[in-house]
Figure 1 (spheres, chains in turn yellow, orange):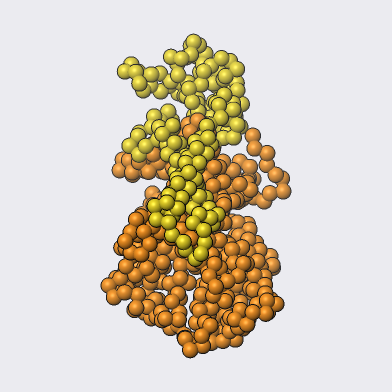
Figure 2 (cartoon, chains in turn purple, yellow; figure 1 turned 135 degrees about the vertical axis):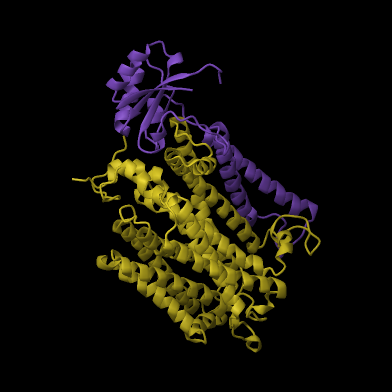
Length: 174
Length: 457
């Protein structure tokens, strides 16, 4: 984070459909959007903003495989090699063990994916997030535009925001 | 834009706006607890304290203070365990399976149902833990840790051990799923507290929300996490009660040794879980004035799930009897004959009346859309489901292969006391949840307000 103050223009949108059109309108006019903050997930917003699909499912898959491998290794080693025991006349390693493969796969996949989500989204209990407009968790959609990363003037961006459906345009410095 | 179906009924009534959702749901977290809340909370706490006394006695004296004997080694404890695990099925079913099926009506009820799941699973876990007697040694029997009491490692061939893995995984994943859902709503309360100038509340709820900012990128990842968690939880929900049924079905006890158990237990679990969700939500919607969010339509849909699962359970009861007769194994035949006509006939017929006959009343639209009938029947169903587990467990073992060892089971104060302990815990936890956490998923409800809300004019 730079030590000099960062200047943002903040467009407030009252409705998710106006916001979606607004995002297209603003981007078409060559304005770079820093981020949009919403009180609820807006379908299609990630595509409108040009975000790539998240790779979290891949993380979940890898963690799941780790769980399967851990369960397999644990059981084969414990019951097959470390202390081989015949229980109820069954063979040492048989398919009924698969319940733990499934459980550990699910457990590690879920926990690993959620941990990855927290890390990549930089979410932690002691973090105070930047608030561009406090109503963004209530009922407003908030579009933040970093003035430093845009060539257009503040007045031009403000006008584009209003034309794209923003009900208010405010300035916010950090 | 989400395509919406014109045939869908209205899910949120009262012409609510997005802002109304924040206001209506956050109100109970921000306000002081009412007298009614204090009264209900105090009663639960008293029940919990009595239960703790009974539990302490059981731990000090050993499980000999329960009414078990050499023939009936599993009775109230395992009945209560299976009953609570069953109740704990509705929450994750509603949030996971209904999410995959894109059922929007789940959005008003999933938060409370998931909380109920978590508390119910904790209640369930106490019974097998205490039944182990010296539960401080239990970790060596249930976790894969090397030990010197008998086998060096845990017996992976035992369905009881499968159960430990299944239930702990189910509990952990359900807890994570529930918490992930709460994060954006904690941020709503944080920002409202900031606006009201309540710094302490803002700090606490910010920590709980993990510094949630609601950025489009975070929402995109969040939705992906929720969908995958739902996908992972779906087989998990179905597997948990399947594995609980294996505790019985893999044995050779007549009455337990049946292949129908897994689907029959899963249907029974969903049946009792939905009944408990209804009992809790009918009270919650009234106390917190959430009638516009949990509407008669929601209640009707849940009652339809109750008719379906109740009928599956009814067919399973009849199938068991048919197979016992058709199989011509005398021990099997006697086990079922004894259930219906033996000394525990009253438990059997209570189960049949509560579980098979009473849910059929919901075929009448008038009854399934009536709050009072639904509330009474939801309790009747759970009484029936308790008797179902009692019938399966106790009547199957009380008359085994040797008539000389036939016996009866009579509960003691400590059997009853531990059941009361779990009720005390369950309601104490639920009241704390209802006071400090938003009982309805605000973010999800807000996302459907435009498409499913009743218009004001």
